[in-house]
Length: 195
Figure 1: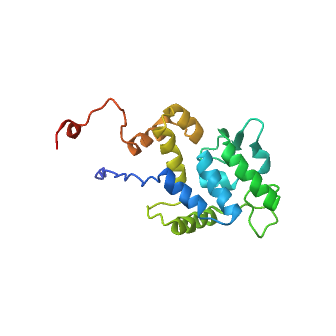
Figure 2 (figure 1 turned 180 degrees about the vertical axis):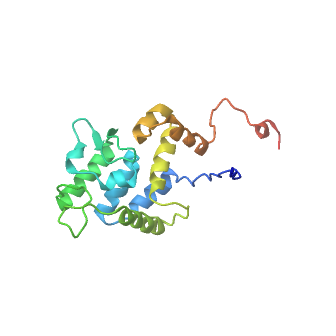
Figure 3 (figure 1 turned 60 degrees about the vertical axis):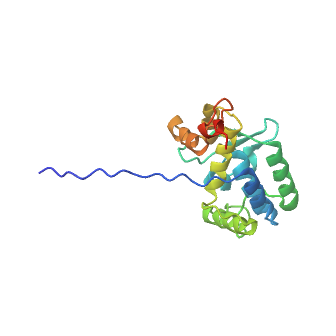
């Protein structure tokens, strides 16, 4: 007996990409320095939320200006560029709370455990509401925005792949559909009309 199931086409909806202004408004809506630093790190390094909450003090290398990312989705460590803005925010946060171990500790564990991904998601959700940003999407929207903003500024797709820690370039190429072609040499048909 042979069972044949119909093939269904999977539809993929493009996410709503945050603008640079929206990201800034979301981050600036936070008064809590720990929460603000979390969102700065997620966007500033293009991290998955699980990668951000697992960061430890020894993962910051201010000499080489890198973050050592462990506990990745595909179980491969990687280094990402540490922006001077992110480092400055991390230093201000450290002066405020003198964290050791996890950078984003759970409030009830004396630094032995990190905050949960759900808690990070709730921080983002509240910040987005405060900022008045209506676009759909959770904290992973910051990673999408990071990738898209890099692509829009002309960064090579293979560099973005490396920064995001994708195993395959196919995962990274989906960001091409998030960015309309902005080649200045392209003349759109409507631009040739006299209206």
